[in-house]
Image 1 (cartoon, helix red, strand yellow):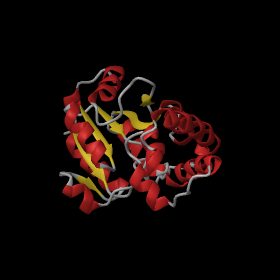
Image 2 (cartoon, rainbow, N blue to C red):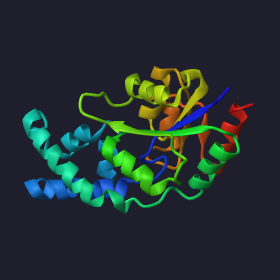
Image 3 (cartoon, one colour):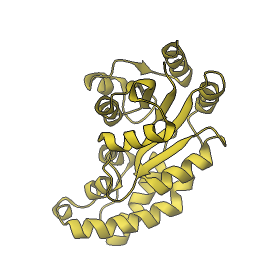
Length: 222
């Protein structure tokens, strides 16, 4: 019996790409590094903020871990100035989240490779009050998805077993996260990775619209 849904955030709940690009380029400009367009940022994301910044830096500097740490700290500060520019969910998704919670009685959580503080702030800003039982991102010393440890912390918070939960995300990282943690999974195609890519990575259940996602999840509760 399905009891909970764990959503990815970036590219699943909201289009965070413009704000990510803005934060990265403010950081790159401070150091005099080349700037990046959104297509490049798409190639850099999905493995957490540190990897995002490391990949955005000039290639010959990426192995300098001390420098990466310093640039990352500046990115955190710059992104903190612009993260709120992501101010709405994808069309139709809030209605689906309400229906999942109110009509199907499912708990709702968010698990992201974004920094934990920004995940919590964005969920509070975008999701209806009371509809997110847990919002978890990456903190110092914790691994990023697809490692199963963050997922397990969410399951513990919700008080559900992996078999009672489904991961909804837009990337192969989310798919692998579900597999590593023993969750069901549904991949969405409105985010940062397209259907062909997701199928190539092994996605079996795909939703092309929030309404289609609801229909899939509703069937899983029966």
